[in-house]
Amino acid sequence: MNKKSIKKLTLLRLLKIFFIAIASIMLSMMIGYREFFKFTIENKAMEISTVVKAGLTSHMKAHIMDKRDYFLEEIKTINNIKALYIIRGKAVEEQYGSSLKKNEKSYKNLENKINLKEASFYWNDRAGIVKAIIPYKASSEGELNCLACHNVQDGETLGALEIDMDIKSYQQLTLHYGYIFIFLLIFFAFIIILIIFNFIEKHITKPLSNILKNGEESYQYHNEINIEMYESQELYSLAQNFNNFNHDVIEKELALKKKNAELKHLNEEIELTLGETIMAMGKIEEIRSGDVKDHTLRVSKLSKLIGKEYGLNDEDVALIGLTSPLHDIGKIGIPDRVLLKPAKLTSSEFEIMKTHTTMGYQILRHSKRVVLKNAADIAYSHHEKYDGSGYPQGLKEDEIPLFARIVAIVDVLDALLCKRVYKEAWSDQDVRKFIEEQKGKHFEPKLVDIVLENFEEYATLVRKLSQVGNQNS
Image (spheres, helix red, strand yellow):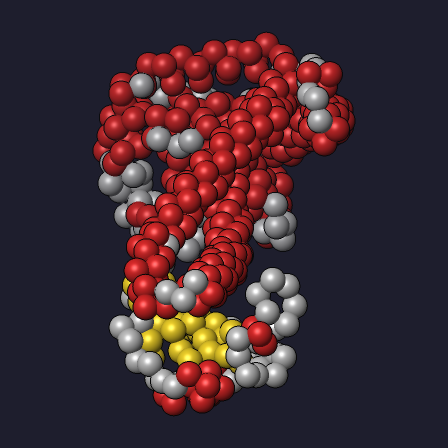
């Protein structure tokens, strides 16, 4: 599963924050600019209306009202005004009559608007136009005493000024400064992100990487992390926790190593004791057999050598060496008259002798341990023959357990090379000839090939161990 880095996670969070912040600021700015813009334009319109009112009053007092159009046109030119109209109120029309000149509009069409008593503004942002209708109220205060010239009540509407203002230049100026403001926001956001990234790299990412690296080294070399190199309290505590954790782990590993060594030694003792016990059990059978000295030892050694040549792994080689000495353990139940008879056995005696395989199996089969289960298989099947003519079950080929097939050829090889109570030792030539003749009959062909290829080594080992046995006896 792909995990994002701290930098990437921070960038994503900051982008969300800045996007929301910039959107909020821009919205606030737009609303603020809008209100400020409206206030500025409306204030500008009110100033223009005041100037126009003062100008018209001056023209009236100077009796040059016929020249007022020049004045109004100049006002339009100076203040970005597209259109400017004078609207006479009802009272003025009744006193002076209506006069629809170039810069005038009819009172009737705008009666409702000029009677509002307050200025009205109509915005068309898309066209860049603001229409302002600003009523004139009669007042007796100040130098411009309207009641002196007009037959009206104080506060009555004399008329209105309609101004169509071109605000495109104001809009462009507002957008221009708005773009600058947005650019500055993005620029400062970028600077802030760089500063935060630098902070994360210096105070989080790099120190964390160092803690992990130093943690591995401290565990590997059994030393402590230098916690004083970390500035922040959190990383300082994390490094301290690493040291405490490594200390605990190292202590437990040493204790476990010690326990494993003790357990290994105990297992070795158990295996050694088991091996010696099995060998002792084999010796019991040897002693009953009279002059078959160290047969169990030779069977164990030869079985290991042949098993290794056959391709057994080290564990199975050790296992067959450990279990093969019990192959004849069932002979402890054979009567002495049969077991120690110095001549060829009769048919009935041989049938009794054959029972040592089943008796050996009965002795060993009850255990669930791998060693004794394999020993039971060997005791039961080491007299089976590869062609199926053996006993007690008449198994053939791969039906016979591999360990039993190996012990079968080892048992015969040792029996032929050594003197027994019922025969003398055979010559090497006769033994080789017999083994070869039994290829595919008594013995597995592969095992026969192994024995013949290494015959001199095996025969030398048998004689050497036989001599040691005779000396010890």
